[in-house]
Image 1 (cartoon, rainbow, N blue to C red):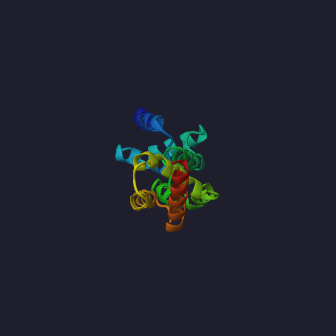
Image 2: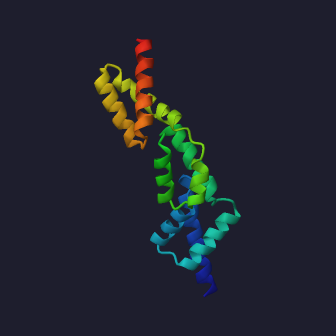
Image 3: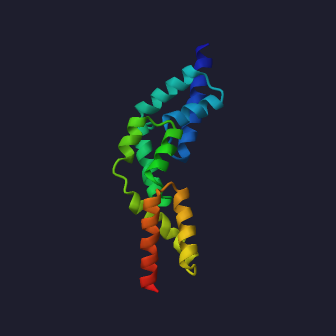
Length: 160
């Protein structure tokens, strides 16, 4: 019986390591993945403890990684970041701490700059509508969106 338990634990641990090899994960993500794989709760809890002991499972570090990744590659609003972290099972107090101090104006500006090349020949109405819609889909408020669109239009006009 002990061999069977060790085998189940080791398989569960191997599955967790494989899942973590792609990118950092939240505790909730790993727990759900291991349940989908059919592992029992006892093995899952033991594996989660082992991963925490080894420093491979830390929801705060995961949330920080997620925020930095989003800011670098796909800027989103604070609200959208908080929603994504909630969906990944991160605790509300961690989400609040990680999202604190986000500069939505800067995030919106970075996100919008990537869209500018496609709008190079657009008139003001199309520029405003397309860029505004893009930023709204990223979760930015009307005020931040309006300010960013106006700023980029002015910069574009000066550069022309």
